[in-house]
Image 1 (spheres, rainbow, N blue to C red):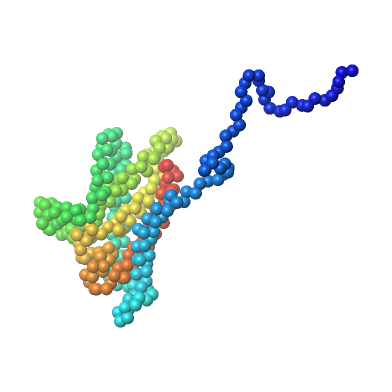
Image 2 (tube, one colour; image 1 turned 180 degrees about the vertical axis):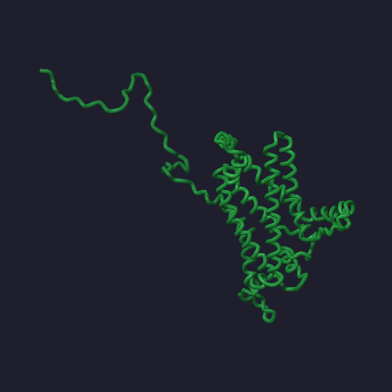
Length: 319
């Protein structure tokens, strides 16, 4: 009988073909000094951000810490030692300083409201205009005018609408009781750079309104007013509120324009801080000025806390 000895089973895998080269084994990963790299290991990238955090600590952390320390510190005139006290903070929230803080908030709220309305209307007119050249001109002009503020803007308004200004003498505005060196004059000067800033801010949001939404509303029988009331304005509301908050912060932090135009005739917190630091009223009020600055920082943080969620919500619809 033939030999029934069992033969070994062939190995699993592809059958080698005669004359074909055997597949080369996978090359080991020699990155990182020749040692095989472990799967899932990530290089340490934190040293890259060290300069950034160092910049934040020096340019923001150090001034903020100095401001907080000075706001809650009182210098003893006899011994010259510093001691912890809330006297500066309480003083910055009472008397003339409270009036200055209130005046700055009122001016910022009023100008922010006007800039939001006027800037949105101008931006909507630009978006709906069929002339592309008009959009380019308005956007370019808004970008330039939004950065034209401070002392140059104040001198321009004084030469134009001041007591002996060109427009004042030409149209006899002094007979109407108009005065540039008043709350109304400050509003006009602030709107000069805030309205263009609002135009630049709200244009992307208006561009984000899809034409399909208006076409769908029209196909359902909705009028143009109903579309804006139920679709357009609700979608734009976060962007408009975010722009209004940005306008408030811009007006609240402005100093040079008001300082050159009205000086100390209008109670504004920024001018009072400058006077306290320079010793124009009383000497040795530097810590009180730091306390007033701390009040402005707190208001600015509240503004940012409102603006950031609004930006995220608007990006959800218009992104």
